[in-house]
Length: 395
Image (cartoon, rainbow, N blue to C red; front, side, top):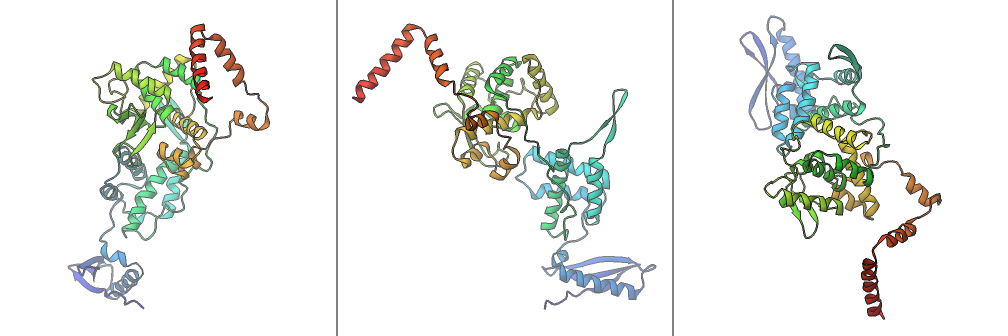
């Protein structure tokens, strides 16, 4: 049986103190309260309770006063040097939302499961906001509420790992949407071509094409540079500093995307970024959404949900259709198989169902004949000459 840590009672003027030693042999003290309110006998009992607590949770001996939520978020960011700027902003934003509810000076050891549940309920409840001169009732989506709770749970998880907290009060809070809507829109190439034509400049065309054809995230598309492109191999290699997962990723370039990038590179030889900052606002996400909505309206296309995320999902879906290896799809897209199952596997398309049921005929031959008839005679002669040459070589 482990020996119970020795906790001795001492005095600090008008206050009782419990003194003990941490794992490195350093003397530590914890205030028990004023002598005017706590008798010596009561202070001895508190020392005994502290000794039992240190026996069951030895890491607490190395921790002083638990920090406030405002202090701990700074410690958390310091302990996570690999976090990118956008990830840090997301964690700080979620922590600020939580501190608006509990207060900035509340110590994290006083956050209970009940407090976490009450904050979750307050986020899910409708709230009234002023829009212009009108009062509008709005409700955060389930995914947004889960996003905030997931970030706060990660922050407090680190406190558990460091021995500051015994348990995470957010352990039982739902941090994933209860139901993921898999009915997102599939933007086919014809529709997307009309959207590209309606964009205000080449920077915007490259910005959304990198997401639709290469499955890049918004931040990755904004940070992509020309030197990352291998024009011979037709690939784009994203370094660790650009990707969300902090791992280098090689992405094959779709022929449409390759031709677009090649044309834009010829016109903009003096720029470093593929998506220049003077053509696409790199900071304002709301401005990016509004600009894309303007392009969709100009193209006569109805806006879809999750404007940019849907483009990336469509690209992943195209990769799955073309590639036989699921691992290759996740490696190109830059996420795990678990993430793909959760967020990137949409509903089975009707065209795929028709292939099984035979409800639709394959008109590929008809389209081939039609294309052949539309060719000029000299083009037909050139193609026949190549075919005959290979046929003679085979015989």
